Length: 513
Ligand code: XMP
Image (cartoon, rainbow, N blue to C red; front, side, top):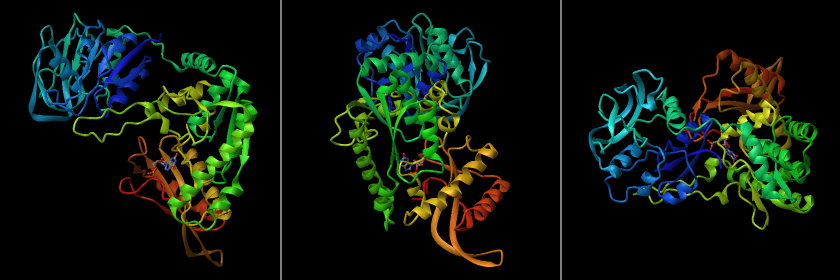
């Protein structure tokens, strides 16, 4: 069984970040529900356990508590924030409401340099705090090893039992050396090696896919996006010709997208690729439709129909592969006082159309997005695909305001190609979340040469974001904006004006629709 660190999730917004930090140290990590029975955890044979933070107070009714036997498994434990308060509470210490909330940057002073967590770190560190409760009495066997301005128990340890607690958050970027603290726990205390690499993962995943699929056939909807592309490359490595990828051209793709997918997967990887040119069908159904929600519904339904018909033509496939990622399958913790907290069910991810009787293969379901990209590189998927910016399923339709016609798609496709090309040339394309063109339904007057024009407007959008939930507009350099506008207006027929969108999200959304 692979070496792993188990993370008990008490509802912190940073739990997934902890998991990623552990993995960045080349150790596999799994997030599990806070009240998973100790026997189940023992069966996972973890090298160490991390108790995440969380919004609750350990002394309130209904606070999420772990199985108390996790402290008797003989496995090292690291409690972070709420996690350290749990450690204290369970092992005989005391937690009380602090006089004031400790929030934001603080300075940690290490008092005991021999503590394994702070090995090779300076005596003073910048750390990030976010807690209202305070440890007021340490449990027996524990001693303080570091302090902050407001907390004499900012880091504690029971060296004999290998139990550690941190009142601050080592996992966030505002604790710049936090990654080393986590690495010290994982490697120094728990004794983990560095077995979690994408190179190792490929072999393991290939074996698992073969074991699951046997001699059966698999179909995969290939969109050309990062997840489905990497899933296709991995499956192809595992089962070769037993995989058929279905690529639907809905007429709403970016310039050269269909060609790139056919070139990379069909000709280079030699994947069995079924190309469905459904351009006419989609554009036919979108004729005269201007309402954004209607457009989405039409596109969604048409996709299911085309895909379903295509799978029938593949023949005898028993499995459908999906590029589901780890964050999609982690159950979020319902927090006391907030029963409405969403529990994700992984069956609604990706949406298996009703009536399709496939078994699912989800070869990326243990991976975070950044790991999928590394896996893609390992498998030889070109940078152009692995590092591409997100592109919405309904394609250019959400960037064409008003009616979606073949001619208007062409205008936007040409303008967008210029944005992508210039963003890449400036080095900014791979540094920001998204940059693209939007076609507005307004026409305005212009002059070109000696002629009066009456043409469309293109809006340029460039945003910075972590996950698409919030976003800031990017202050593109003036000379780049100038080049974009002048190239779009000169080269794209039908456009005589360019504007730059300076709206952040919220209150705006990223796509205009
Ligand atoms: P909004 O416009 O809601 O977009 O701020 C947030 C992020 O989601 C992407 N997006 C989509 N992705 N199918 C997708 O796969 C969709 O229907 C869709 N709509 C928006 C958008 O590009 C941005 O990254």
